Image 1 (cartoon, rainbow, N blue to C red):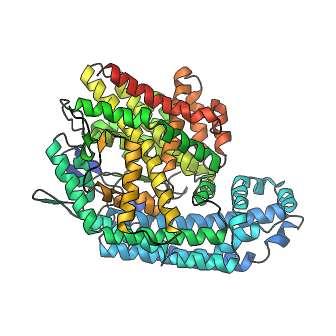
Image 2: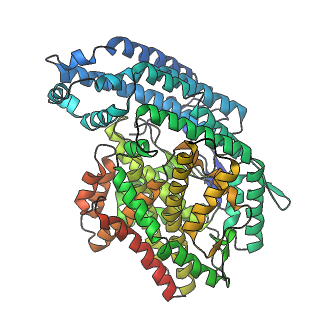
Image 3: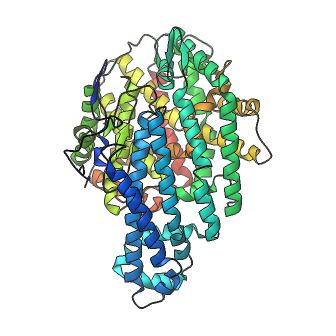
Length: 615
């Protein structure tokens, strides 16, 4: 259950958004973070930081060096389960602190007070958690027969999925002191470079005509009905990215080298193996997905953009036309309340329980929707900790795609709420399956809107928007993955210049988008703003995994509604306790099947075919 505010009478500081903002799209909610802490000056923050220090030190004193012997004792299951529960409680405590600091920081990443608070909390949590590093290492030192015997106790057996995941990490773990060094240095290493990227991106301004706009508002103009506006926005993006190219090149080179060093010491054979391990997905499954998508470029993105170029009366689309709305289709601004009703109705048609969970995000102010200077761009659903609840960040601009973004992030949110009872150690879901929930939420919303649309031009526009979204989710993300692989592979032989990074970007984009899209001057720098490259290397294939999986799941749903919603919600509620093969088995799906990905891609191809028929 969501954790209530510690003190309802406690005043929230101005550094935590708790109100609503009136805008052209209606009244947009700002989240209330008081379910975590009342503000950055809440005394409970310091108290919990101090408690984390003390409790982590006590945990280390009580258990370090003793787990192997504990596992051989007659009451091994009970005593090990007690240790795991204490470890889980510490994970929850520090997760609450880190989540709050991150959410406050994302509200305004250029505010010095928030940046300092975020950095200070991050340092304290990292320092405290260093004392816990021994636990996973010692669990993996326990003999297999001893750990299996201890699992005979139901108290420890409850944690079997988490322990199994920990033991999969064993081949890549280092000696305890090295693990401690890597952990402590992360604050001044990868985390610091991530923070530099975030603050740089948030501080950028783009000269669009007489206006100086932040990145989110400028990117939004690439969807403007007027080609002149799209071109000016694209040129403004290119100019500012070019002016900051040196910084982004340094960040990219540094983080790629940092990852190469860590991977080499841990013994990962492939540059993406660490991501596959954390996603609990086999390398061959990902390779099959990538191969299938790249083989399908001609019948998906190449085919669609050629079709769109004809709609625009051109031989080629300029890169700023790629996501342009269709010509002669009136642009519509969608008010926040309409977006809310649309998504909740789509969720409710599928499952009243799913809609009720999603509605809580609106009722209980778990959403921060306005676009503000300094606010983190894009959108996300942060799960925080099982003892609280998720929070959704959006930059709502009233576009139809913003409704889909809302549906996407609420899909994550519903998933996170359903998985929370598994506890802090087993609620988190691998990225591949996490994106399945979000994309399924989008599909429900799209299908409901399409079914209610009978006017030809409007239906065509909706189908085109969905195809573009799916191309962006599947083709574009696999192109991103290909770009990352090439960058990280070449970085092993030395630093990449800005020109080389731009050249790789253009080569990969040309392959994926096809001859109907002209990648004009300036587009070469557009790799610079993709945050996933910085925050989560090789994350991006999870979007394509999720989209293709949802296409297959939805086909099962359309063939038979009976019992599907219950099976689907049970899949989400499993959190991180099951492998993807176990979760998909009730639906008759297997991601290891060579034809599985082809089936998901065929759904996109069929939609393009429908567009060709109503051209």
